[in-house]
Length: 301
Image (spheres, rainbow, N blue to C red):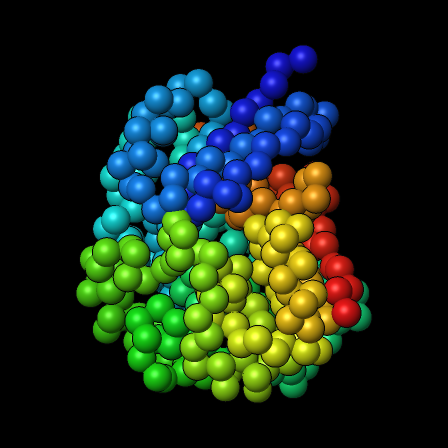
């Protein structure tokens, strides 16, 4: 049987590399994550070498776009990585964040997990705007850490309208900064330097990008729930030690590991059989319906 191959080339640590073979919609898939330890040139070279030999690339550890309101902001450092793929479609996970992660919040709510009145710290909302909007729709009291954890400014954001305004002002400037200033890459992903811990402590639920959460969370996370993705067994153990009650991952677990949204979006693109530039939100939802992806909920403590 023809094997479809999806490779995520990530700026993250190579220690998190993983490869599985699995069957999705009756087709055999090889799904692989290759970390380049923050080396952009290595990421570009890896993509160039595999271009045309795989069915889809995921661009890991960096977003091509961040979103606020109706506007997308292109991150300058991501452009050369995306352009390295000339034949194979390359995705950064933003299409899946906008569809799957909205669905996850709705699914949890319909399954009896109430967000009404819960305090949620979203470590970065421009990275996962679909999830942020869905949380607000379900009645959560949202604190967004985009300025706190991305730029280091001591200003939490409490409304999507304010986030939209700030993004319009700062987006064109911040998107041109070196990506390493905005997000932990390579070995920095393994460091924990608690920051603005008050907002973690006040929250019932911590949501968003795993590497932001891991890097900035305090020692004591007792009784809190986490909604994230891309966790390894070692990550789960760390969360268990910190006292986290429930771990919810938005992407399915394959052989003990949940892959990033960029990887799973690559799977969806390969499974759809359509050119990536023609895919609509409805196309993503149709494939998600057929696959039946559901969030994984795991009680840690």
